[in-house]
Length: 280
Image (cartoon, rainbow, N blue to C red; front, side, top):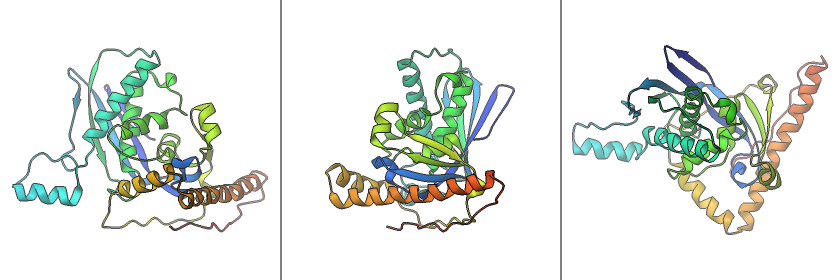
């Protein structure tokens, strides 16, 4: 995440996420290997204000239309989406988290606004990027960053999204909090004992050259995830087996990267590996 502050104004960015291996087993106690993509980002700006203001984006949160027909077309094309609901949920969950952890907040108000160039519904985690950037702004504004552990921030971000009905796992939020390339293990015992997964940042230079493609005609991935989630909760043997296999792919990718990191550290040089990707 990048950030800057000038004359009381705070800006933070969070970047798009690419799930390289293991996606979406993070929501099913699996493992993932993912990285941030600096080409695409969401930026949130926090400015001191006499009242608490959540500013709509002129493009992503339209409230003015030429006609009823254009309003309906917009909703058909874009859906009932936008960043305002994400900023509102972030404020709510941040306040509740601080209240439950006895973290005192000063009474100054602020305005929040956002911008993003992350393609909509392209599987690049545009929603969580907005929440992550907003959380970073609020942590800095209230000067409580040292009181909210970095390992707990992904869960806090996810809770804001869940509050508005977004179904997902922790993977995206972990990468956007930590940045770079991260290996994640969401083993159930680890999650229950620590309250979070095991997150291991890695050197991005270990990755081979990669290319990102996304469809120009996006769809709501939440509809797919909700069906899979329901089947997993119902004990569907096929879905559970698939998630175990997908999680294993992340481990298969992580192990050679570890070896490559060791070889580079020993001065032997970078080693190329072939990754077996999973396409459902």
